Length: 141
Image (cartoon, rainbow, N blue to C red; front, side):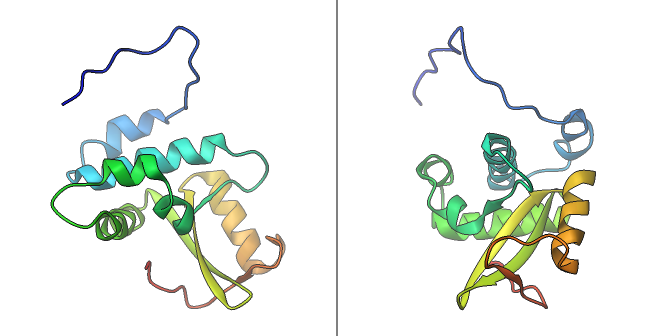
């Protein structure tokens, strides 16, 4: 184990809703699910614009996240399981879209604003470029 040198004086912060600590954290027993949940919160708060989400491909291509998922198994398999657990628990919302014949899995926080954005996307009121909703939603790869 490497020793953490501490937080620098001028560091950025990521907001985490208090309900995460009071309701979710006590229920999460898989370290991979905890890591993916925190990583998605961090990644989403780095974004600008509306709506804010992260794709499965972005998660899979994140060296920081994937390095943190190394344990007794394939990091990509741990990612798949952790994302499935977080969406099953309701922490994350999942939407499968298609762009030019390619499937794109999007993940949102299960917040009021993101639930509304998801409904606007599903109804066609909100467009995400050339991506179109694929129904029924495909399983996480």
